[in-house]
Image (cartoon, rainbow, N blue to C red; front, side, top):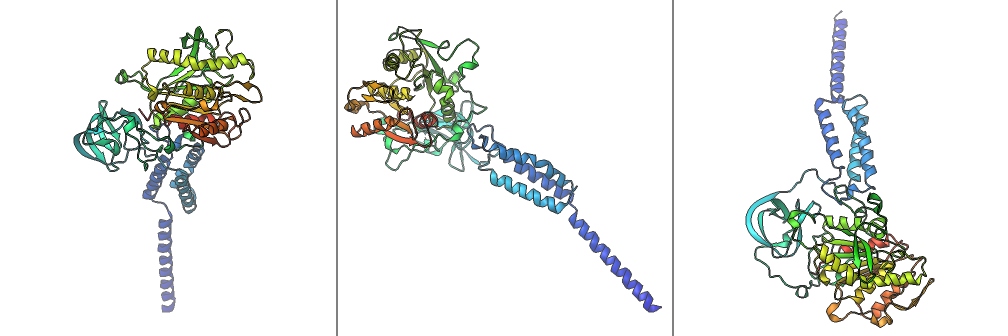
Length: 508
């Protein structure tokens, strides 16, 4: 009997110990309230890193190529929430959640913080601006642009950040300027001729733009316009296409006009003003001007909206890559007949003469109109011209004809005929009779001259490269490059547009 009792006691003790172990295991496997909260917080935190910042107008996060990744992450969120409620196998779902989080972080490049994270050490001092620079809402070029300060301006500094940027009083509030543009002593303002860059200085697009002399051979060109500059942003205003107006205008009639004494009639144009042009704070500010010229059969909307030059330039200005400027898109078909508004064919000689006539029109009629009706900063250092195809040929002709008026010149896929030549459509007599005429005198050399050629151009063929060879032979300084994977149009147009806009008006 004693043996039986001993056996039963031992069995009961064994069963008790197994029950305790089982209870402890259940306790360990079951998610606690603390575990659920932590999972939810982690999910929310990871989700926030995929949201694009609304204050960054040209952030890579807002491009179409990134959006599918964000959408995919959001669609998996309900599964993570279900896991935290422990309605399925916790171990399996925990692995799934960890994989989702890891994938989200890996796919999200350069996440934009939802709140600014920077430390500012307070200080109070009056300091001076060494060169024109943008003022940002935070201490980096990725922050919203609030405006700019000019060389020699006195500023009240209220703090300095960990990365060296200064916080200053600006327009009734505060803004931030890079450390290299603020000094204690007032700088001596010098002319462009005495402020040539050192040989070790390189032109990059990641830093704040500075209006200082830039050696042409130091400029670094992008082969294609970066994608983020070709997409419209919700917080910026862009030029309207003619189809968006209700005033009855067409691409060649209606809207803004100016009188041309050369043609004896009104010609149409589009004028795009920089953001903030009409603000009271800018009522006395003058802006440099860029003239953008369309190609054969084109019109004033061709380059502006069809080829999206307005989008590229507006985004570049907002990002601080390009200077603020007025951009003019004229109709360059300068016919003297108001009923003859476009050429009939590529070999329409009367039409070609109308395009060539614009070289006179721009200097005699259009530029005075702009000076009278807009706050234009005059002088060759404040005036640029860029064109495509026939407009590229005319841009080069304008630059060589009026070097005292235009300091910046660019052409994308320029058409033949600047000098005598023959192509598949015409025997061109040449706007300049000799190749040796394509030179500038020492006094009026351009600050920048760019020719961009498409590497697969079936319209103008090798003529852009021929211009390059002529300029090389004449020892006329310029930049020439082939835009890869491009025909006669984009991406060549936007490539030259971006490179030109990013580097003009830095010499005034």
